[in-house]
Amino acid sequence: MDVFLFRMEHLLPILGQEFLKPVVKSEAKAKKSDLLYCEIKGVKATGRQTDNGFVIFKGSEAVLEERPSTQKYQYAANLRATLRSDGIIGEKGNRLVFLADQEFSSPSAAAAVVHGGQANGLTAWKDSKGISLKQKEEKDIQQND
Image (cartoon, rainbow, N blue to C red; front, side, top):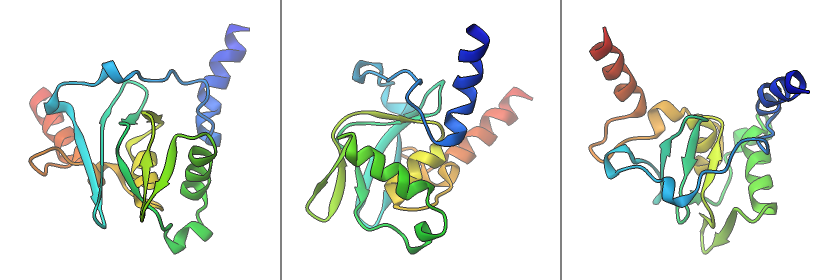
């Protein structure tokens, strides 16, 4: 049974199913220096990296309209539809708002929900100084060499 569960934990995220991942609690929010922001078209989302991927915090916003590319690459549209039906995001005026913290398998999956289509999470998420997640990771690698 342990082998089965281990394999399921690794296969389900590939299929877009994340229901076996633990939910990050609000009190697990990191210090302010760990917060990352994703801004597009006047909406702003706040989140941080976790051991399992990336979490977007309650109150964050996402664009309402999906990009035309979601017709061809439907991952972002399907994820947004699931989050809407689960009551995680809701429409508020001309944008979507996160009604609860939500963890994603990667920064790119989180950014895709915010952007309304495919997005590179390493460049979309930035800290308060405008330094992207990719730049932060490259800096960490250089410091560890």
